[in-house]
Length: 209
Image 1 (cartoon, rainbow, N blue to C red):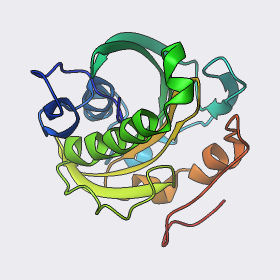
Image 2 (cartoon, rainbow, N blue to C red; image 1 turned 180 degrees about the horizontal axis):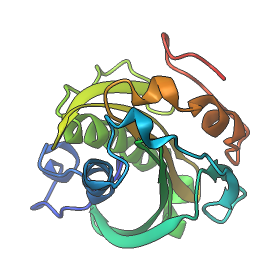
Image 3 (tube, rainbow, N blue to C red; image 1 turned 180 degrees about the vertical axis):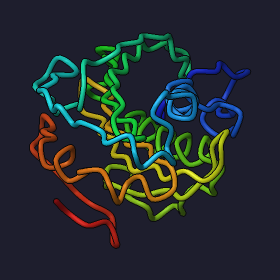
């Protein structure tokens, strides 16, 4: 259950470690960004960020998206379970914003280790989907982080945060092309974000709103 896992793997621990196990949401989000009508490099698009509140998950997580959300739900194999991950996304100004949630099996509430593996896997999947090397073992998988990677049309910047609670796997993701993040009010997105636990950790070097 790490990141956006979507491709089932064979058996055993390889499900949590293989790079091929990259979650579909990120891949599709990057493709949506690349194929959007207001292309990343078209500064003249004069984007409108019509922020609107969006709830995701069942335990009170909430944020905002810059347009009417598009929602997609897909099965995500993880270990011997299959999770239903729903991603709500919207694009504005060459930047794609997404909020995701999946309910966890009831038995996982008492299994902190499997939840930690899921959080770690989710982060690693995001890095691999962006063509970047995952962080080391000392990385806190629930802090916000930035990835400088590559998408179908060239360089991309992915900023994301993952939360795995006793009952849910939650994600917030921003995907932008070269310099698009500098023109977009990303701080509005992160400032609005509310996790069920009220936390908002950011990695070193990631500016807080």
